[in-house]
Length: 84
Image 1 (cartoon, rainbow, N blue to C red):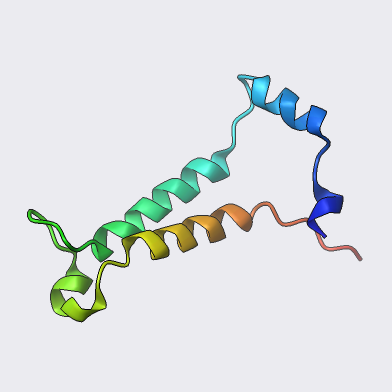
Image 2 (image 1 turned 30 degrees about the vertical axis):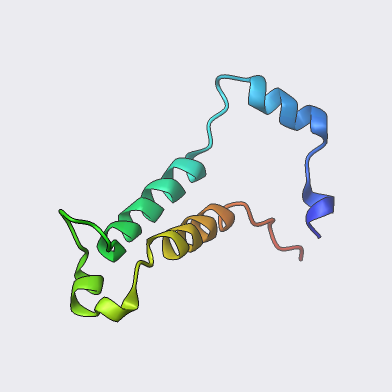
């Protein structure tokens, strides 16, 4: 399970203190979540996304869909390799 894959606290602390440590999955997941959220935005005076403008009853799906897309894209590269 996830407890077996987890790094010890000292390893995590060293990664957080190291300025050379980068995590490309974080940035790409964040940008993808924002890119998906823009067309779903509603309740705005200046811009309403295409989906809420065609289906007003749909509501504002920005937060749940953006979060789900970001979480999925962040979790996929972090999967452990399959054991053979």
